[in-house]
Image: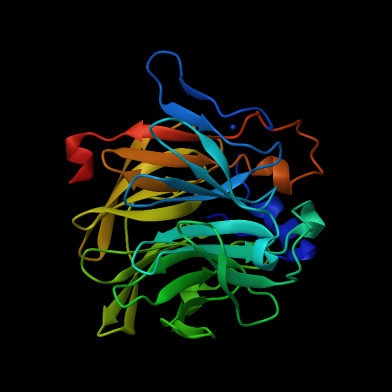
Length: 335
């Protein structure tokens, strides 16, 4: 998930350096010409979808950066509607979202981007992890991230119920143990530190090996954090082909992941030792921000975020309605 500081000076610098370059009407379920991907239109003229997650039954949840709140969508019928209202539990712009079946919680990262035109209805002034009931959307808890300039970006959950988030404004992966009320630093490394005016840690996911994997957006890095009995060990920057603005990261198969690159593609990434390969599955998205898998389909959120962050260039308006796209995966791509 693309990170921007919750403070305008940081965001202004970020948009100059790393932002790459899609409704108020009813939901539309369609196929594009020449057998292109299925898509679902999202409500909100300023939705700017930033993250997507899915429950075991296939239900999709999409966080909105521009309008705030979270949309719930049915991939079979194409119906999409507001699930968590803007401002719920004090929330502002929603970045990362994660459906946690074990705790029946929909986790969401909230950041105050009101200075950039984000929602202003919530009471929060900083960055926080929100928990909502996965069935009803009712607020469950809110935990502020440590530090005055923190930016909660993306989320992963381990087998013990601990929640991990990437702080894109600091070189830290944070952990919220189950039933805890404050974050602790799980892993910190100078390689995660963002350069001035740029985005740092972004995507996060556990691999089948039990280790934690993260991306750095502006730096184009993919890292493995060794995990031994719940404790962070060595941090390894994996070597492989260049990645352009790597964003959302989700587990796929044995030592493999789905990854979106902000430059426009959905990739399959395979890790072997301290290296990785990346194979494009679909290109041509306008600033894809995240991905989730439902059976043999990958759903990609298309953020069009340059229209949200870079007002100075007067580059027109985003293509409406905002959409999420279904990308069929072959058998070989899911193993």
